[in-house]
Structure formats: C-alpha cells, structure tokens
Image (cartoon, rainbow, N blue to C red; front, top):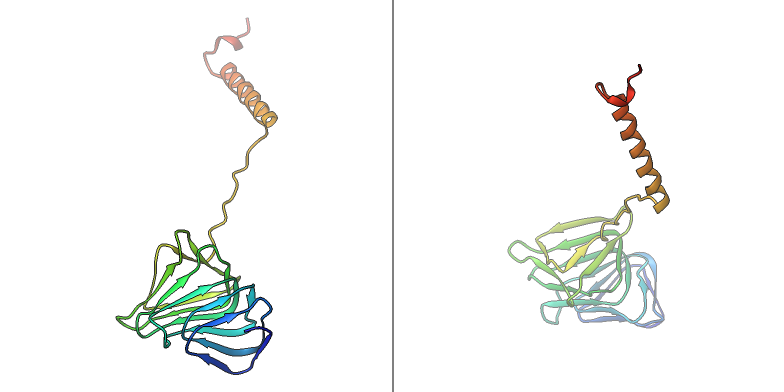
Amino acid sequence: MQGTLNIGGTLSVDSDVTFGSSAIVSGSNGIISVGGNLSATGPIDTGNNTVVLRDGCIGNTSQISGNFVFQNLTLSSTTGRTFVIPAGANITVLGTLTLQGAPGQNIQLVSSGGGTAVINLGPGATVTRDNATVNGGVQIGGAAAATNIPTLSEYGLMLMALLMGLAALWHQRRAPGATGNRRI
C-alpha cells in the first residue's frame, strides 16, 4: 500500500500486507485484519485503529517487519500460530496489546534473529494474554531503565576521606582511657 488508507470500518486481508514508505493510515476506530505477514518499508503509525494479525490462508506463521506504532495490536489464532517479531525493530503499542490463543493451541511469539525482539508499551498501555507463549527472545515492554548510583568527584572523595580521618581521630581522643585527652 502506498498513499493514504482511511479506515472507518474493517479492512480484512487473508494474505500479506505491506505498507510502503509513503503510506499513511488515517481514520479512527477501524480494524485492519491481516491473515499473513505485516511489513513496512518506512515508519508507520496506524493511528487510532486496531491491527489484528490472525489465522489466514498462508501457513501457520506470521512475521512483522518494520517500524510500527499501533494504538491496539491483537495477535490471535485458534491453530497455535507462530508470530515472528523482528529483533532490533521498533514496535510500539500505545493502547492494548492482546495475545490470544486457544486452549491447547497457544500462540507463540518468537524473535526473528539472534537479538532480542522488543514490543514497547506506551504509558498506560495494557497487555491481555491468554493461551500465549512468549519465548525468551521476545520482551514485552521496554527494558527497565538503569539508574546511576551517585558518586563523588576525586575532590569529593578526598574531602570525605579527610573528614572520616578527622572523625576517627576525634573519636579516639574522646574515648575513655585514651592517653591523649588527660590534663595534669
């Protein structure tokens, strides 16, 4: 697809969908339902719509490739479909991420390569998960932010060492039985 796709209802495709670099998705509360692979050659914001990857006519695997921002993303199957998430791509869900398999037919989320595949969650995003297996190479939600431990500069460390030395000396002089604090 190139150009503008204005969604107001449901667009259902049983095979692959590819968004070109100039594709724009507009409209709101629509559904883009895909039964195959979903790819983009440029960054795609699907607007205030829902994208559903589901069982379709092509095999039992769906791949996502490209950089996507979804309001709502549903990965759904009644046949135990495998969804391949790209390692190193930028996929963000702002609203609801739904992972829905069937009893005894879990969907599988796997990474496309040796790296970690991440589905980022926007502030306030929710995840609904039922009969879904997320393999170790897939991370839902961004990595926890590392926090720095406060440290002192070399001058701060020297000052702290000097103060600790003075405190130890003061404590030693004030201790009972210390020879240095008797007056004659």
